[in-house]
Each structure stands twice: as C-alpha cells, then as structure tokens.
Length: 180
Ligand SMILES: Cc1cc2nc3c(=O)[nH]c(=O)nc-3n(C[C@H](O)[C@H](O)[C@H](O)COP(=O)(O)O)c2cc1C
Image (tube, rainbow, N blue to C red):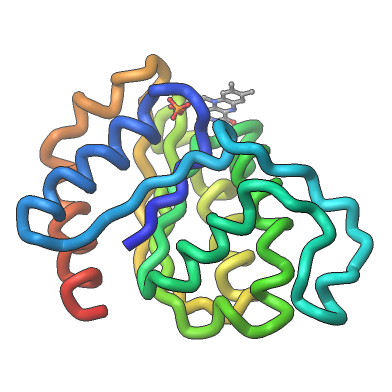
C-alpha cells in the first residue's frame, strides 16, 4: 500500500500514517509513505499536453511518485481538512496525476480516504474533505473502498488520543491490503 500524506508537518496525518505503517509491517504487509508537500512538485499549468501523450512537460518528483503508484494496488489518501476541503498539497498532487489518468493508469486501483479535522463531528467539518477526495477517486476510475474521518484533532498529536478508533480503522485497512 502507498500512503499519500496531505500535510507537510509532523502532525496528525503524519502520525497516523506512521502508525498504520508500523502495524501493517508487523504483519509483513508492505507500506510506503510519501508527503507531496515536502517534495519538489510543480503546480499543473493545465496545458493538457498529457492528455495527448500521457507525459508531463515538468521534470520533478512526480515521476518517482507516479512510478510508486503504478506499482501499488492500494492507495490511501490522508488529508487534513482545510476550509472544509482537502489540503492544497494533496490537490496539487492530484492535478499532476492527470498523465496517469489519461492513460487509464489509475483504473481499478483500490482507494482509502482519511480526513482529519480540528472541529467536532457534529460540525461535519471533515465530510467535504472526504467528499472531494472521493470524487477524484471516482472520476479517475479508482475503486473507493473505505473512508474514515477523525475529528477533534487540532494540535499535531491530538490523533494519538483516538487509540481505539485508530485500532478499528487499521483492522479494516489490513483486510483490504491482505486481499489486494
Ligand atoms: C488553513 C487551515 C484551515 C483549516 N480548516 C479546517 C476546517 O475547515 N475544518 C476543520 O475541522 N479543521 C480545519 N483546520 C485544522 C486542521 O484540519 C487540523 O488541525 C488537522 O489536524 C491538521 O492536520 P495535520 O496535523 O496533519 O497537519 C484547518 C487548518 C488550517 C491550517
């Protein structure tokens, strides 16, 4: 499984990704993590050249990221909620996946979505974050399998207080990775 972390700080998304990696690796399941915000990734100009030939004119860290995605069947997106949307880092990354999409390279990959927010569940702060990532997944012909929203996570390690919720979520993730 490849985990794409939509926050560049060592915060809740980062902490969760590393917990998942540790737990799955303990069962000999392979997990890689990338953080697009800490990589050299240009913003898509919308030139649409990749629609014609599946190749982007930029030479940057998207090349290795796309190679990683090609090699994995299960992709997890973890995003902090930003103004009720997905994070900008993750959106920039998604836009640059168009070369892969245009050659149907995302078709059939299994997708898991996690949204993390500072607000409580009753405010539904994470719902639209999840929805925006999910609509990318569906448009790009991936199979949406699972999502989970973590609320009440403001400070960088607040997610650590969600122990049993994380445990239950990781159980579901393990089942998906084992099957795929
Ligand atoms: C610019 C900005 C906008 C945010 N907007 C929201 C929001 O709309 N809803 C929410 O619940 N939290 C919001 N937050 C809080 C973050 O989602 C929250 O702190 C999250 O745990 C950060 O994840 P990280 O630690 O992985 O960076 C926002 C944070 C920032 C910096």
